[in-house]
Figure 1 (cartoon, rainbow, N blue to C red):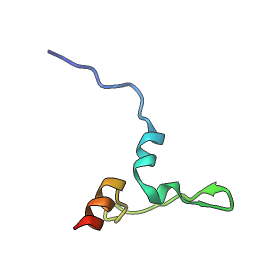
Figure 2: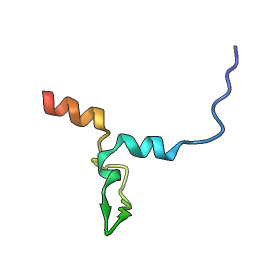
Figure 3: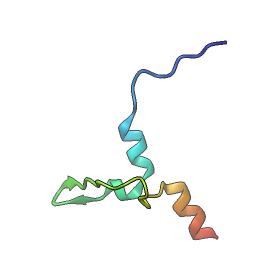
Length: 52
């Protein structure tokens, strides 16, 4: 069976997973230009680390 991937990428959904990307400064979202070695973590990882 062949399945088709969605044709769009939901940036807002991904951004919502990363608390740091919800940060604003002077009413505007902060933009991060990090390398692949960045330490940005999704909400689930932060919660797991807090409960460890």
